[in-house]
Length: 117
Image (cartoon, rainbow, N blue to C red):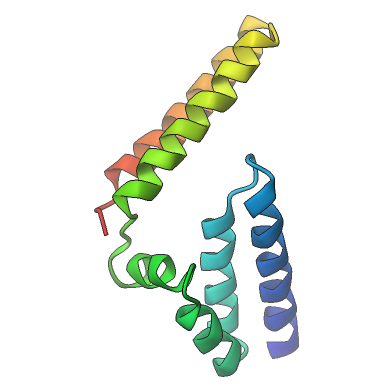
């Protein structure tokens, strides 16, 4: 079972790394998931991701207090707004825009309701 958790953790890290280059794929949530999976499989991998200079502080903030850095909140909001603007420019159907707006609004409420790191 530990092998499965570790494998899923490595897949999550891979998706997170891809998310650095693809704006619609979130990086930090995949790294938080990887930390969760590594905690159940490998102490070495779990310590590695927590000690990572880029992702470690965000993961620690989330694990300790469920907190999100204010800068990350602002960047998330900007990227969500950009994605919705692209949808508007592409002239998507109003039904699709309404569903997208609802989903994105729920994401924003979640992000901004978390404590700040």
